[in-house]
Image 1: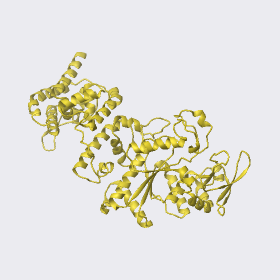
Image 2 (image 1 turned 180 degrees about the vertical axis):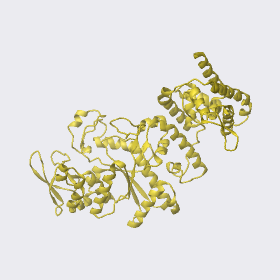
Image 3 (image 1 turned 180 degrees about the horizontal axis):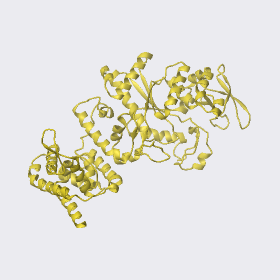
Image 4 (image 1 turned 30 degrees about the vertical axis):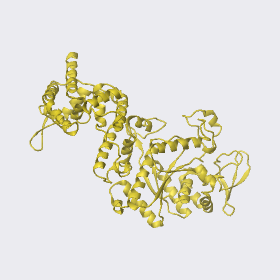
Length: 539
């Protein structure tokens, strides 16, 4: 069942889906082709995940709104020549002998596949499969050599001079003088030749070029995989040949998108709907660079959090720059969990979880404890051992176990790793002021006094709320008290900051009542008394 009204939904995947639907209406197509591109000279990374995930969300929105079929093509440009030897591979000396050859003609330095291109293609497919993406894989080498691009290449040959003249203004003086959209494959060496085309011959479907090393002239057909189109012309040729309807790309490719779109029009078609996403920044707001190593890898994120939390982070405002660093992870996890709970209550398509989970909440039972609270527990226990965190959890939820709640068990393991690498090294305890110490002693007294009432409540939100009330009541005193809008006395942020800075060595965290509920009243009171006693002894 489709729902065309969804195209008016104020969520960016539906806004993009509406653009795709308009394109299909104009072209008369009944199936939409979405594409993502991949350069297999490197390994899949966090940007690869983001591009495929975001394209998938637009595709799902398109299907839900129009009911029309669609395909997602993950296209590998594996016929590109090896430009340099990567730093992170074995047998680098061997690879240096194959510079300039198509990646599918370069031996695999890892020794596991027929070629370096095949190795990295396999890594890409395993990467995408690991996240459950639905896609069709496409190899540039296969498409060129099988003749799938022949008609488009012959068409580009017919308009060779127009394509050349469209690209030339974007090039430097040296390349401008020699540019052609075609790169011939040397018939003897197999190298993708970066040479001028002396003559384009549409009538015979060939180009004439000269080997600069030997001076020998060659006539090479543009069909059958005997040439490779230069990058921007290649992108346009692919859009034209396959009828691509939608493709995303990063801000760094804005000019390439414009030029490739102009080339598609020269070829005689309308370019696809395109979307430009912003690039990631590091914690200091600098552009992330693989050479600088100032970013967060996808492997690191998955050590610390579930993949759905990364999807949640990727979803919001793709047209705006995002700071991608470890400290965004806890919020992303808990926001994702909250989004799933909202999705369980109502399948609202403005909820990012709707897109991440395909319109329905996952069947697995939601975890009973949030990620930030697990980090607090790790701090209280001063441990990165999942078994010790489970010991706390099972005091509060006796029926829970890693076997009965695998989602929570995964979060426990993630939280332990995150606490070990990012929280523990930065913990800085400070002594309590006299006013803070007095309020914390009052909190311990209130917790003990109210413990029978707490235990009469079922584990969960009610008990946590009652414990949070005790936290508020202990803080309704100078210098923390603030007047509320209703005339009642409220509690200022300084009280909650004091709890975290004095008791946990952190600057912030989730509602403290939730942490008390899981660790237990006795342990919470002991923590307060131990910290205050340690300060007294130090003084």
